Image: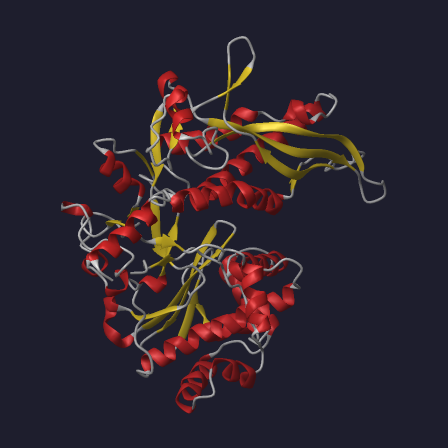
Length: 522
């Protein structure tokens, strides 16, 4: 392709206002589907009403969520459309009202369910991205933008909170729900580790399967101190017989020999014994019944949570977890035998990017949980004072609004992350474009992390090789390549599973859809 042709293609490409397209696409997807998905996950808000004798249980059922375009409430009580320039000048937040269908339901085991109050109520205000589908200037012509004080060439893709323009930084992280095997460098190459970041509904659990110097496999996961022998854990999950455990790990003779060593060292032989042993670990000093209950709760809740599926029996989920652990064990053994190389954490196929919509979904989930706790408290207080239970009186919209606006205003996000939201760099036009296409690594700036800072071959066409700051942020703060686009329509897990099922793939537990950077076409 000659120079003129390249210029023509480039001019046509950038005339489509694609520089902040990944922010718009992600945030619009959050508004259209993500918010409702979070509400559907929550489904109901339980209360303690009915715990006492003589009272019927009361709970709240959540329905459809709806969001308008940004508005401002004036001193006289009237509500007017709000435009970005007005929000900047008046130092207010460019946010839209959020409405949700809520029903207060009363009923018991003997009594039929009775809807006490059902209505659509305002639950709070959601900051809106400038230029998104819900933005009041969406679809305006250049002349109309100039009339209301907007710059026609402003790319958008940022929020306005208390008059300040804030951009959400695209966050780079290791791929969830994917097995990564590596040698433990702290202790030499004698120890092999297979790990996976199991993620479901915002909860992220690190599960490690480690082969120690003696060749014994141990598994560690949240809420259990130390590590649990691999054989004990898979037996607790329902794989009891030696033959089935070995068969599920591998048919390779050398790996079978390693597995026989593990089986000889095993202290338990049945599922009941394994759960008892686990119970003594997670609830030592408690009664036996409580230990068993706690052990079952821990392996159902904290071990590989991404394998949970709606409508699937607990026994089937546990077997899937056992099979997944066997795959992790096989990865450790293959690494020990030199059959596979260590996985490269800096390879871009092992990375995922969280864009504005993903970050807002995490934030909305936390805000909704806070609102749910407040609604529960207000309902119980109203019931205790024998007041009529009404949706409009128990919902305080400031609770959700505060939880959504404060993190964007400060940059302190859920999960203890800081610097997620930043003031837009308005030094010049190129500075704005650069800031909108910036991504950051979660790694600490004070540590060397030489490999993570290096330019990796898989960044070709995705990440700019030269635009990175000097100093402690070098290589950790990066920028997208000029024509890079994030892949879309890959976040529907059910659709992905259907496609694989149609292709004849069997046994597909917990596949998570993710956004992945794709290189620009030359």
